[in-house]
Length: 123
Image (cartoon, one colour):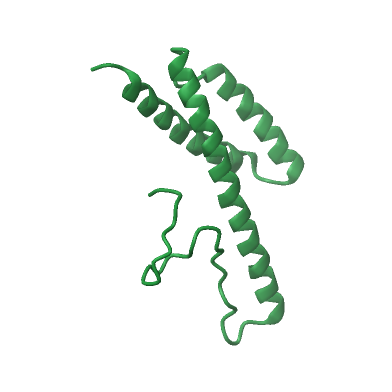
């Protein structure tokens, strides 16, 4: 799906830049509604951060293809895992979860880099 949103009034998706905010359900205690609103804001921030990260890694993939570098860099990935595990521990986040989350992201980035490389390689 492209990053562009259409402005068709029949399209149920929000226009580009619009945030999906869930209205509090009837009977939800105010404190729970407040926590959920914060979680919704954090989820939106995570999506925006991931989108920005993938925009950057797409550029990295193009550069790697141009320079004929491999799609993955296992030594850097290992250093990043150690760094992110330490950040997770310092932040009170389960480092195993942080590593799994990072591995998921890196696998997707490598897949994108391979696709970029393959698209540039003559058949």
